[in-house]
Image (tube, rainbow, N blue to C red; front, side, top):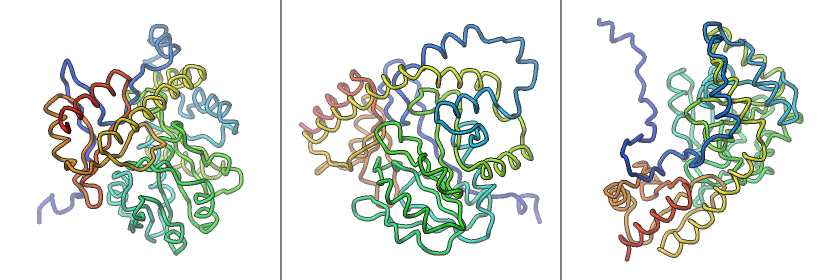
Length: 350
């Protein structure tokens, strides 16, 4: 018997590559191509550094009050964490405790099975149809909880709010989590359903639309009872998960709504241009409501295109996984970055 026999062994999540080159086009991790709001930059210069010797607010009210006001809910309906990954992990630990299998799509955010394995939660994936869409009937069976992104990752497909509500209605005894990491780029949020269904948890992140992936801020909105349970578990693990800079800078990112909406408009405009150009070059893809396009080519393999672009220091995401191993997930960059990408593809494809 060795000490290693008692180690929890899991296959970890594989994050997107973070290459370091002076001149590169980085379109592989769905980061925002524009800087954070000016208020964030201003607060960085004015931040009271002497306060870093003190613990931050355990209840994070600086941030939860601001988010509550912005999304027109009560502060008791908001939970914050170190990126949406932390929020979802805490939600798995809190709500998926029945011993029954939890459900999520077979093509989805690849962290879900990792968290399930880490916490010893049984799960069963539900197959997306041939158009990468969810089938509501697959989620109308006994389960220990449900989670899915909307729009989905890595496909970018948005499910209508009617399907989301159908799944919530069919599962009054389970917590249903809707991961809305990409909803700001043109999707319809499930937030209006939060007050209607006490078993719904909507999860968001600052990493995409608010251009703060490096700060690590995520949040969830739900029924006050759900949020209390989440906080009870959080305070049993680590009361001070949100550091003071995250609280202060996170608040500033929400206050400048005009900048936020302008950034979204720029990303959406570039995304639509990319769709047109990719189609012209022989690519097909589901209609994306996110800040990326999930594309396959009629002639060239995804792996060949991926390696060619990489040789040009243009980085996109390639998943060598069942059903999607001939697709590339291409993040939306600036207009200039999108043009460099299209020019390189034109050079390859002729």
